[in-house]
Image (cartoon, rainbow, N blue to C red):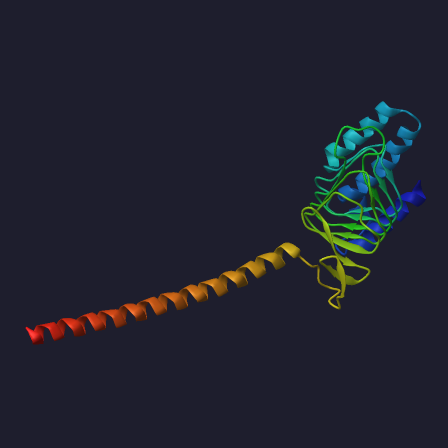
Length: 240
């Protein structure tokens, strides 16, 4: 037990630069509390003490704002940063060294029995507000962008963003229209929605320029027609 606690504390120090002391982690980190409480709840769940398991989970949820079903299988090194609003379903399986940020949901899509929640591989990062819904696998070393909604399997070494979630980087190369491209900007997180809005703004600028040119041509034509009318009127006056 003490070995497990020591390992969980080391995980916090390894991934959160704000952690300053062991006492701070033990007393002030709800993610640490939620993980340790789940270890106990899951042990009770495996002993078929379902009521006690749910009671421990419920009390933990009340104090941490993190809901982890006792039946969820969680590997070593899970780090929950901030944690508020996180929900992890009953048949969820989480591998080793996974990082979850606030607002993440690992949930199901219906009332079916059996495996209905996702399986998260090793070394996966799920950013704030992401939703992974359904019984499928998120491969090792995958990254899920903030606010994404993932509804199908994710291969290893991929970055997924958007609603619904789509792969934008795979094995270090950028994915565009289903084709792989070399992407040397490994520090950048692609945003297809922002790219689309930028393209729309550029198109609007082109259309506005065309409209402005047409308005200028219309004004010039009106000036020419006005000059011709004035000239004809003057000629008529002279003839009279």
